Length: 303
Image 1 (tube, rainbow, N blue to C red):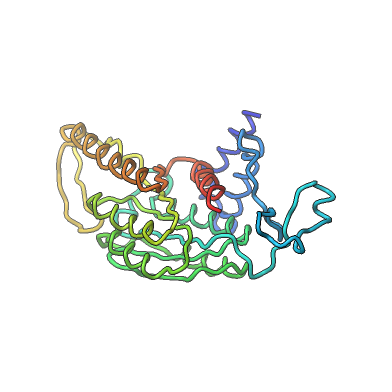
Image 2: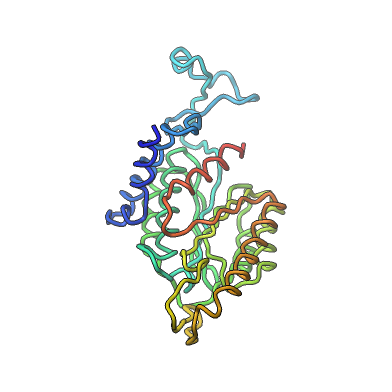
C-alpha cells in the first residue's frame, strides 16, 4: 500500500505532468492520479462523488431520496438536479511578474495554472459552481461562477492563456474588489507567492472575504529558491516586476534574507489561522496531491 501511494505521488510531480501538453488532460491526470492515491491512503474515507447524487442531509425532502441507491448501499442519497450546486467557488490567480520566476521544471504561475485546472475539473465533476479571476496590478479577468459541464472548457482556455505580466501585484486591492463583487457566500481559492506586498495589506484583503462570510483557502505558491536563497558566489538579481537589477554576493545576504522571509511567511500563517483561513505553502517541485488533499479537507468541512 505504501508503495502504491509513492507511485501515485510520483506521477503527480510537475516534471511528469509537464510532459502532457493538453491542459484538460493534465487536469484529468492530476485528479485521477490523486484519487487513486487517496483510495490507497489513510484518507480513503473521503467521499468524492461524481454522480448526480449527494448525501441526504437533515431538512432535505425525503421525496428526492434515491431508494435504488439505498437498496445497494443502505445509505440515503438525494437525486441532484442540473441546477443544484453544493458550493460557489472562485479561483483567484496572481499573474504578476514574480509568478514567472523558475528554478525547477515549472514557474510559479504554471504550477498554479495546473493546480487550478485540476481543482476546476474536480469541483465541476462534483457539481460545484466555479468562477475565476486573474490580477496583477489590477483585476484582468472575471468569470462568474457556473456549474455547467461545458464551463470547464472556458475556464481551461483562460488558464491556458495565462502569462506572468511584468507588473507589481496588488493583491490586497484586488481582494477588496473581489469581496464586493461576489455576493453569494462561497469558497475563495487564492493562488499567489505574496511577494512584494506588506503582510498587513494582504491580511486586510483576506479579512474582507471573511467579513462577507466566505471560506478562504490560500495556496502560497513558491519556488524553492524563494525560501532557500541558494545561489552562486556572485549573482545579478533582476526584479521581474520592476526590472531593477542588483549585483551582489548571495552568501552574505542569505542568513538575514532567510530570517526575514520566515518571519514574513510566519506572520501570514499565524494571522490566517486566527481568521480561520487555511494557508498552505506549496513549492513548485512538490507533488500536486498535497494541495488537492488540503482542498478536500476544506471542502468536507464547508456545509
